[in-house]
Amino acid sequence: MLLLIILQQTAIKAQQTVVDSSVLDRITELEKQVSYKKSGEEHFLVVGVATMGFAAYKTTNTIGGIASTSKTNSFPDADNFEFSPMLLWRHGSKFLMEFEPSFNNNGLSVNWADVSYFAAPGLIIRAGYFVLPFGTYAKREAAGWIDKLATDPMGIADMTPTDYGVEVEGGLPLGNMKMNYDLALTNGNQLNPDGTLTNGNIVDNNNNKTVTGRLGLLPFSNSSLEIGVSGMFGKVGDQGALVQNTSGNLYAFDLNYVKTLSPILLNIKSQYNIQNIGNVNYLNPADSSTYTFNNHTSSFFAQCSIRPVGAEGFLKNLELAGRYTTFNTPSNSTFGANQHSVTIGLDYWLNWRSVFKITYDSYTNNSTASKNLGAFTGTTNINTFYLQFSIQL
Amino acid sequence: MKRPKFKNISLLIATAFSIFIVVSLIDSCKVSQQVAAKSGAQLWAENCQRCHNTPSPSTFSAEQWETIGLHMQTRALITDDERKKIVDFLKQ
Image (tube, rainbow over all chains, first blue to last red; front, side, top):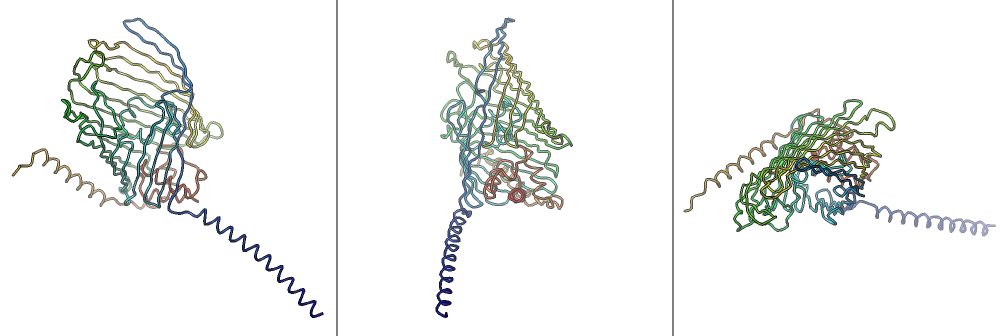
């Protein structure tokens, strides 16, 4: 009898040992999984933007009172199509690397590739290839899933280069207000023989570096209003050339006001750009003769959108937007024109980061180019209907 | 001895003045009690919509929000306190 009891207890213990061993194995496996998922120093994330759509154009050219009209359409709208995954690496809490390749109408290109060091509260140091702090549109508002309309305001982002260099920036409290600063030192724009500028050059064309800076002020404690002023100063001529001392001085003023006035979310954005380049002899690409003109360019846009955020269902996902844009290039040059466009659109937000847009744009170009240089001197009207989908990846 | 050019002296004065202004501003940068008392949710609602719709907290994981927070700070130039509060709110 005693022997039987001992044998029974031994069997129970053996069974318990088996059970305990199984639990231990499971715990070990879970520990491995937790260790695998535990956050380390390095963090990698892919976000970005994809924008695609359709555009139908009606173009009317008028010269000497005689008009000619043509109609075209395209899948997608070439100026706004892009697939741009953005790769973000974070090392600990101090370093962030950003790289955004882009497939668009220029083929494959890079939007930015830079490293940021979060040195101290209110101080970020960046180096690499980045969007310059000139106005706010190009740096903050241009992405398709952010922009309320299917098109960019002409002449605004075009005057904001992406360039190679170093940058310091930060946001600082100022009592009930806030301010931010952004200062960059880069290779700078380069002057083309016809008087236009190119940017984003990995090799500097002269020994002068371009300084670009922006100061922003948010005067209200609810951050609803931001006003900013920017400047970009540097020599643009090639070293050793007759134009080597030619400077390019640019200024920008921006405004952003976003406020919920229940039941409507009101969103107003505006920017004014000025570009002055020294008056030197430029080259007429048609016959290689030289000529000069007042090399002054300006662009402006004002945009307003409203969204009934207080409504229910379908209605609260709609947003109505309108924008007026002007873009004036130097008169008496080969590319002089007074351009303006009126753009209206209706958006449907599928969620906070994906949108379907219907946009109509009416664009007018009155040429101010020099007749003597054989340039087109008529008027062009382009009416465009856009359907566009954009999503943050 | 080569005399410094007037242009260089002006540049030096402008640089010194700029540094003085920046240092003075940074030194005087204090947040008011009203602003300091704001919650992460309030800052999320006020600051994100300056550029885009307010993001859903469920979009990214806690670790991913830390990365997104740094990226957004470089764009919107929010303060460090704002970024920390907004990210903490989104991670909940």
